[in-house]
Image (tube, rainbow, N blue to C red; front, side):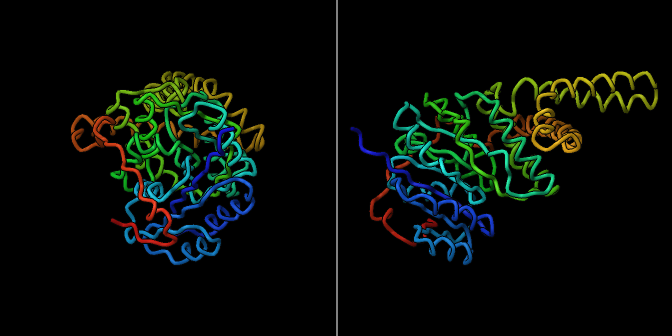
Length: 356
């Protein structure tokens, strides 16, 4: 019988609060599986350090905040497990998560696996429910043979992580560093699975400003540049055909509505594209109706259309930026070198400054 694979859970945290405490609480339920927990704290954050050390986890504190990509790489260099499981600090595990990871790697040829948010987001406000449920819907309908990685709940064989080069540390904010790693893994021929049953709870509170800033500046813009860099527009997740047609329909609807101020018949065209949007996304709105009721689904529609509008705008801006400034974008996968294996003495440190 093959020996049980050991899991190293790596959690980067920046100014962790109640959500981080809940994340740690979700780890208390595990005792039978072989795993270690490595908390990488970025920047001065005494509260997170106390919470992590209280539970006996290995803690690494970086002096400066260089972003989650750097923090995850540092945690990976400290890990001794066969499987590196990256978990965000505002995510709570389910009772089955670690077993799903361990059994999946032991019984399959996975090189990496990602999961999904569940359908019970932790924050009760409308935007948090909408955003996290939309993420759940997107992952539940996506292909099981994935082309991206996911840092919020994603596991990868340690040897594969080293060979791929780890996360690109030039992403200095929570951005698409996980998507970029997934593209590299795919280019190198590795298999990334999407396990739709591997669901975790997202505890993050989304407000208007935080949602728009994250979606536009830290996701849509850099993802556009990545698409052009790798010439990879995969028909999956947020890039599927329905999403592309919806972006076109939103702009056509708005444009015709504006033109109708000069010539009223254009309004009929705007209405037609509005109906097309509802038809294209009927399954999304039925999903929200089933989960949260009709009034919630109706409130979702303008936010969903706004999402398509700013995603399209980001694609246009990102495309222009790429072709004007493309030497400044992250390097192609072939130029990122494999990471060196970690030193055991570094991995056994309980609290250490690895900001170097």
